Image (cartoon, rainbow, N blue to C red):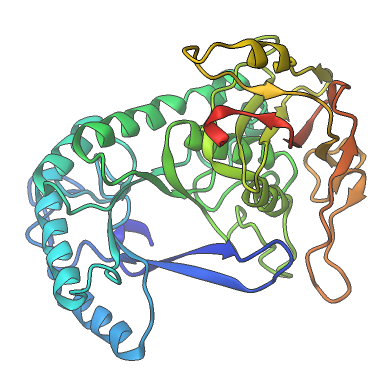
Length: 405
């Protein structure tokens, strides 16, 4: 909700096994952080005064009475720094989130079932975030949340160019790095969250957000967020607006849904350092495989003209001859077939809404189930082929990285 007025509900899903459709949902409620405040008579857009908690208290008591499980409460919405139409000073916001934390502890005295408290839920402003976290003190904020819409307003005619420009995509790394540095300095126990991101402001880009091309931005953001040790990335939205993962009218998945689903299934929580210096248009992120053993890699080819053949070095000889005092090295034997998932746009139209997985269109079944997403098995001794304008996931079972042991 804009200006922090009203409730925001965010959902996170966890799969319980690859063949099960049973889901566990985690619910985060965004709380109105402007209740009780008044517009400043001196500074335009600034709201002053203490936050009134009665509305939040009533709501929490209702959820307790109904037996609803709330994972976390997020304080406000886009009120940090200059805000989006409204703002609150960092020191005041810090004091008020302490009040919220005390309310949560009062109503949920058992630490094992106590909802988390998140904030500030706005755009990153270094000075503002520093002051907010210093005032709130230790053991108050359980997740330091910020928003990212790094491609600007949805009606930008140059957005299709931005989304394929590696130098432009790299710019937001400074935001991720800045938030991580502040968290490490002031709230190392909390962790950084992207609690809202949909690429383009004002509902997304009508002719781009629900298309294959959006995956270049979205999956790159998941990789970058992981690289900079962000614990959570909340996509705006599951349904609603042009940036939804599901078509707002039919609920049929848009291309980003399938990319996110494979990320969830393949990419584990441990991030691996990976470098690729041959061409900036090929973006690469690697994690320990979610299902051991092995590693999972995602390749994003932003180029419409160039394809790439990627060869992984064989580390078996070095690993076997390393002394016990040496730093552990990865071991890759290349004896097992790789598992590859190649995403491409139908007929090469990256602004289309049909995505192919290993040349098969991803459309719901007659019973409206998600289609089977099986890898193709490829001889591990051959290079990984990355076609132009494609997204490729690769899982290598016999690549034994020490971090993944």
